[in-house]
Image (cartoon, rainbow, N blue to C red; front, side):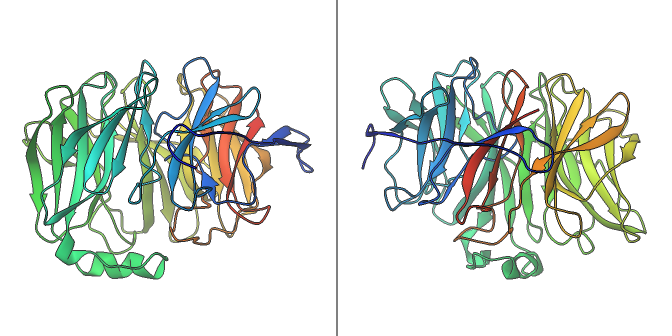
Amino acid sequence: MGKGQKSVNIFKKYNDKYTGRKVVRLTSDKYISHHPYFYNKMITNDGRYLIYASNRDGNRNYYKLDLMNGANIQLTDGYEIDDFSACLSGNDKFLFYINGDSVIRLDMDSLNEEIIYKTPEKWKIGAFGMSSDDKFMLVNEMNKKDIVQNNNWSAFETQWAVKPNCRLIYIDVDNKRSRVIHEEAHCWLGHPQIRPHNNNVLMFCHEGPGTKIDARIWLINSDGTNLRCATPKEPDEVVTTHEYWINNGSKIAFMHRQINGRTTIRYVDPITLKIKELMECSNYCHFTSDSKNTIIVGDAQPPVEPFLFIVDVASRKEEKLCFHGTSWKSYGSTQDCHPHPAFTPDENAIIFTSDMDGKPCVYKVEI
């Protein structure tokens, strides 16, 4: 296999035994496959093609899957690809992803690649977030001397305990210009995101065990000024996690879990920094909203049963969508079989990953 090679995925269709909803397994259980990170754009605007990662050629590479007929084309041919980083441009013409020390822009028609940003030798790229107009990118990096080399969850607290030297890079995509806007000598920075429709407001997190970090969600301006904490830590807090921007950029959604186990969906206003609780919910690991913030989908983790749940925002009611049944274990990456639910463009279905059939596979369930 190699870039441009074609194949066909055989879909497996079934009805969820708990809810009766129609589910399709989109990838083969012979390989490790998963979709990109859940708030990255992964499906073309017409709903026809899905970007996903797989080790079907021996390395982690990206593929474009035709959701109508299973036709598959390999997009990349690399050895150091970050297989969760892919993000389609708003017009579907390009795919952005990380390969080794570089951020790549891939032309979806010609499959030609160009380097948008190359990190200096002593640093390693963690992840990136795109602006809604694709003009800017926010990247987090860690000093290589501070990286803990371990691909299972035992390294999570160890990496935090190292108190690594991290920084944020703001990139002008078309001009390929970059600048360091923030650096912390002893703090793990992650999950960089740019506010939709306002490229001046940037969000990132202090990563690590929820009970040990100072506070999770932080904001900063694109010129590096006005650093502020968006979610001060509460005395009974276990974790604040997996924050994301609502599509119109009006607020940030996040999960909040207390010592007594109570888990809630909350919002924070990026201007006033006022926090509002929407509702109590099951113990989601990740969650996201549709484009109008009328429906939320979340993936429950232990001790809750392994289901995807959907929430009607107006009525504040939660119901089971389907069984995801994932094990949460590592297959070389701690994220490999995380469900990471994400809406299709028509918002009539959810894409998720699970290893319930043996290896991580990508699924689609109708809402």
